[in-house]
Amino acid sequence: MLRAAVAAGYDAWGYNRSEFGVRAARADGFDVDADIESVLGRAAAADALLVVGVPMPALDSILSDVKLFAPGCPLTDVVSVKAPVAAAVHEHELGTHYVGGHPMAGTAESGWTASAPDLFHGAAWAIGVDPGTRAEPWTRVARLALDCGAYLVPVVAAEHDRAVARISHLPHVLAEALAVTGAGGGDLALGLAAGSFRDGTRVAATAPDLVRAICEPNAAALLDALDDTLRLLGDARETLASRGALGELIDAGYSERDRYDTLERWEITGIRPGDHEWLEKLREAGQRGGVIRGLDG
Amino acid sequence: MLRAAVAAGYDAWGYNRSEFGVRAARADGFDVDADIESVLGRAAAADALLVVGVPMPALDSILSDVKLFAPGCPLTDVVSVKAPVAAAVHEHELGTHYVGGHPMAGTAESGWTASAPDLFHGAAWAIGVDPGTRAEPWTRVARLALDCGAYLVPVVAAEHDRAVARISHLPHVLAEALAVTGAGGGDLALGLAAGSFRDGTRVAATAPDLVRAICEPNAAALLDALDDTLRLLGDARETLASRGALGELIDAGYSERDRYDTLERWEITGIRPGDHEWLEKLREAGQRGGVIRGLDG
Image (cartoon, rainbow over all chains, first blue to last red; front, side, top):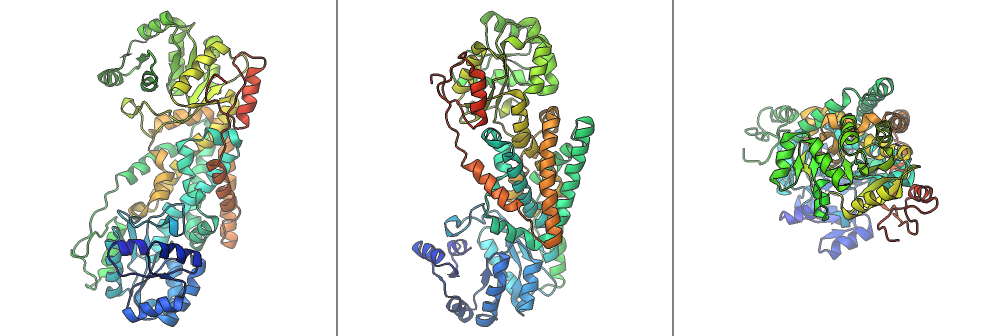
């Protein structure tokens, strides 16, 4: 995030709790510190936009510091779930200037060395349009995401969480199950594994603690998605056992992958932050696949 | 296969039942015909190595023609399962000169336009070492695969089929289920989908008839693999429901993906085709992850 913001021309500085991470970022010329009070103090003085990028288990501690040292700053986050973050933000009484965010980009790697200035180019960036969201911080968050090369998908927290359970958290769980089942075939099976296994297990290379921190806070929505998948796989298993055929799953999967490949991301225009019912209108447009590519529409 | 063989310097020609496929290949300068009798007659006269590359449902018809027009040629195949192909070959009394094969390479695309001369570079190529396999046709198949840039994994039919159920057929089924479950979140979910969903559903873009032709002939082994996956996912579902945690699956998946990433493909040397117990020795080496990179060892 820091790399992308600086590459986009922002005067940006960062905090990391790890001295190792701080040194690595500094070695690359970035303005990073392990002293949260000083980093947030500068932010408060500059009315900077705060971007919180930590796994859920670390969120509470960070928000305590924000409340102490920079409670008036506009605040967003890039955490993988939105309803639990919003709940924590409101618990810390930081809701007034908060707008949820979630750039849909990343790799199986983590840490400073995995950072890249163009990570968000062409990526979808979920941006909160929950009731009560204010136009001023929303516009700052939107502008940052757009300046990083992303396009915006307006969404409320609960709907975001249900959606990412299906297209981000479930893929992690399936990748883990595929890795384990494949390895159950021993070195012979792993030695024969090619593209379908490699791609299907790619995200299983993500650090386990990070996977848990991404998926587990979204347990309810992930359960729904998992149950759908278990039902589909169970049905395929039954027809395969009873009549040697995988049944409807194959055509359905092909058709839905094609729907994904050909999805039209139409551009939302004419809804300005602060306009009458702007949040409801953006939410409804996002549900229908609309995206925002600029703020001057 | 034809592209790769020609690129490797072989005098090779081909048959395709589709006039469209024949025209496309000819337009690229390849020697291809839709007349199976003439293609196989040339092969018989030249004692050419026959490589059968058709989906399982088309196999029987091709083998009938081979039996009629070129029954004495060395014979291999690149079909996705081995035991059903071997059974069909023996039914047609073509077993004497047969050696099973399966290059582990491909894309979600099919047809002539999807062909590429370097498809097999660096790929694993399963080669049959079933009891009764003869050294002469085996050496010709091995040499072709090596000349196409692949390395050989010696394996008997049943063990091959159990292995690919886990690392090739199961990934297809999981990709289909992920595509359907993801699309269940509507355009909002698909619009937020990024790398994990894209990679996890990549092979769902394969033509449904081809997926069925690949997976369904291997029903028994695929059922075993599917049941393992259903058990893993069911356990994760239970711990997620009862205590909000995905349990052991995440660490296990990470560890097995790492095992795949770091798998050492050690080189089999000193076993020559036709030597005493060469088939048993190659089979045992393949089970332990051994591969063949040249025939002069």
